[in-house]
Image (cartoon, rainbow, N blue to C red):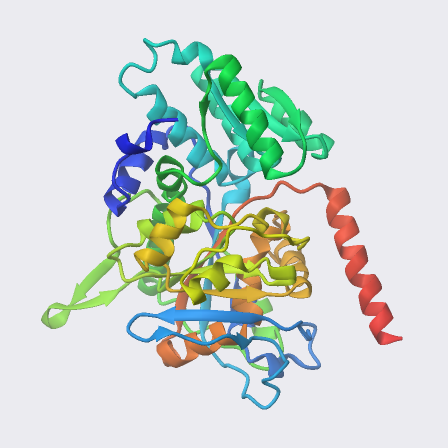
Length: 455
């Protein structure tokens, strides 16, 4: 990919320019809202007892930094250690950015297309034989397919290093986009060594999955669209007199009566949504916060850049199982965690935070904090997205919704800072590359654990 020294600065304006570069190559995915899930998010968890929504979640931990308040301590967002704390009673309106409907089924298409487009424009690249040499990366997941597609549409070869243990469906999908597959061992050292051999043999340019400015800027374009589409929908709802308070107590009957919207808003790239009312006082008509999953951090840091200067807070969401919350722990301690060894069900979030994203997230403090959730909470959120929004997403994509529904520290933050007005919260559904067989096994395991607990 393009030399990092030639990359645009990591700013909101650069994200806007990246959007202009790739908008004809990627989908503008829809922004959805769902009355039932908004009502559930706005209900104290204690009030759900005896309803179809009753759920006893596993322990969650958080670290939060809010503007002007410094860093909070580590807490437990589930039940342990906080049994006597009053359940949070926030008003949360949810707006889902559906990147599971993106090309190749994930947000990764944005970064891959931006990286390839920037490379094609690098002075001297084509003249030096770059088009014939192509690109290379190592990935067993969505980035592999995204780069293969971007390269194919640009007429250049793609060499993808994949571990031999990669799932057959992902290997087949990557081959289907025309990539040349090179197999390697499963460790990062083995994959990187295989990449270096390909570079030595072909002269291909490396396009990393997340740790490069061009990738970060490309991924951030989803944040622009989410801000703009949600603002348009919020403004339309206010203009039509739609009820803005979705607080809900005791059962889901009210939510079931409310219409569920699936709306795609017009493009207004680059405009911060706000209106001015009497006396020049500005009244916000957009999002208050965005919840995004965090693995390597390319997308989270890109979304944070897209929100710079808008007043919208961005929070990272992770699983805490077996230490998968590396970004949260690093954020708390002021030192990036470089290794992650976790078998969390959210397999797309098992990657440690990259150096470039760390600079945006921690050093520039463009991310306001991190929240984490447990495996059972992720499964439950995944089920809700399937049953209520009729969306197939991978477990990693369900983590932000799990935070909104189950993390008591996030919910208490909204209640404390927003009061009765509540927050409009964007939720990034990062991808949908999961097989029906894998979903079936996931929910079967969940049911077996429930039965074992009941007996």
